[in-house]
Figure 1 (cartoon, rainbow, N blue to C red):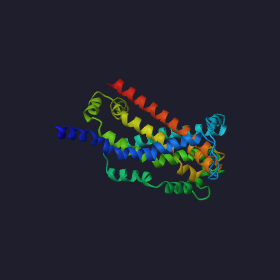
Figure 2: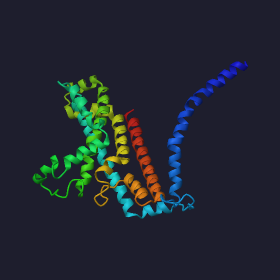
Figure 3: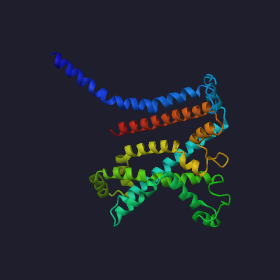
Figure 4: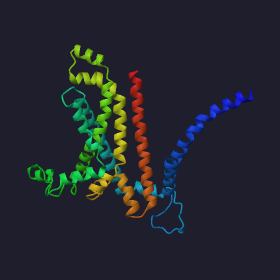
Length: 301
């Protein structure tokens, strides 16, 4: 009887023991950095402070400063606009290309493989490609500048609003293959009998997409829209390497604001506060996306 109770207790403990390493890893790599950032944001800690310098608790002073900072509010607006445009164009381009390459035609496999190239490139390689393309002296787009109906003589990456447009295009080119691959997998699961039935009923391509394809891939669409928003919200390397947040902070997203505040102005506390606000904002957006997805699933059922 004792052995049976001991065996049952071991079976109960085993799942917790197996998940313990993951719990510890998450606590070390996620919970601790976030809690440390929250604590730092409530102090007056600076990056260049001496080891023995006293760090004072200032409460919500840093957050109050952010609420009254035009620079921070501008960065929040730029980040939100950048993320939303990425959702529209990157996910939209991914869906469109997935629909096109889902059709049967000669060389489809090669086109699919070639389409993944931008996503496979490292960020630095993508940045170098676009810097060359947009160069006003010898870039492809630079050479075409004289034929454009608007003035781009200031440079695509150094003048407003073209710098913002450039990073949107660059981000779309870099990320749409990932969304296209996922959409392509989702399109494979669309029931062919429903598509054929809609065709027999006289539905055109757009009507079939609206009534058959879109409802079938809606969960994938919502998930990719959420991922696109989060990926864009935390994008740093490509923006930093192309515009550095300029010109005149017109492309300074929250992530760049965190970096600049910490490593240019040495205000680690304010930098942490910006990061915490960004984390909360992203979390709220994720909750909103998931709530919309849950509501859509309930209405469909």
